[in-house]
Every structure is written in C-alpha cells, then in structure tokens.
Length: 208
Image (cartoon, rainbow, N blue to C red):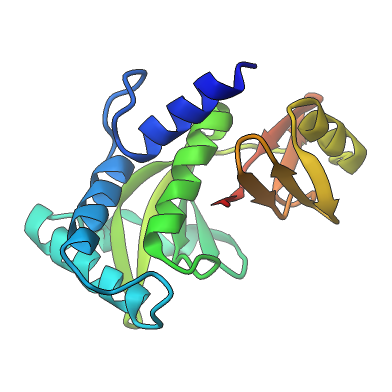
C-alpha cells in the first residue's frame, strides 16, 4: 500500500474531489457544511457548534426535500445501540438512524461514513436523507445487510488490522500512525463473520 497515494485519496474523498467515484449525498452535505462553517466565526470546540450544524442541515433538507421519515417501516426494528437504531429495509439492506452522538460534530460523522466506504466498500453506507424523532435530528443511512454465520474471532480482527498498518492501542481500538486515522470499537458486534470473511458493519473512524 502506497501511504502517500492513500492519504491523498482519503483527503480527496473527504473534500468531495475524488476522481474514483461519483459525488455522493454524503460528500454534498459535508461540503455544504464546510462552506457554511467558513462563513461563520464559530470554532469547532464551541459548545454550540454542533447545534449550529444541525440548523444548517435542517435548512439544507428543507431546501432539497431530504426529509425521509416516511421511508422507514418502524415495525421492522431489529436492534439499537448507543448511537443508532437499525431497521430492516429488505432481505439485502438495512436502514440505520444515527444521531451522531459519538462525534463532536456532524462533519466528523460524515467523515466516518466516507472513510468506512473507502476502507470497507462491501459494507458501504448510502445517505438516504434525514429524520426528526422527538426533536432529535437523525441521518438515515442504508447499508448492505450482513447475516453472520460464524462467531467473530477478535484475534483475527487484530491480525487483519495490524497487517493493514493499524496498531492496537487498547481493547478494540486501533490507530494508523502514517494515515493519522483512529478506528475504534471493533468488537464482535461491530465486526461480523460470514463464511470466514470479516465484515465491518459499524465503524467509528476519527481523523487525528
């Protein structure tokens, strides 16, 4: 793996400039947020920063008809974690509602989606739109449905990550020093095994 090429490609993807794929809605909304932030004096560590991002996303949804509350069949709920609710869409796909609680900004959440799609295209996310539930904003994403048929061996996960340049920093967390990427929470509920193949279904990426 050529680290410089990968770093450049990651930056292009995050900035919406990648030549290897069509511009996605994730990149579009992320670019819209960046443009709005450049026009604002608010800095990222301001406690109101994410609230302002939420207002910007709501405005964008109103302008571009991106509300998707009616797309989810809430009777097909299958699981819920700290950050998201999961629903069956069909035999091949699930919907996930995520309120970005693990991230200090919506921009960081969208970066996570883009990094997941780059590193793990077999479980790539598609941003469908946004929903509001009890006054909380959620991103609605679609992802291939992976049905595990074997328990996940966490030693195998570690071996896979180390082989690809990541260092195990603690428990299920990893860091790639050359790329400046943190990948956390790779336990056996977030990495599934189907026919001896690992599928990373719930990634938590950060750029350091």
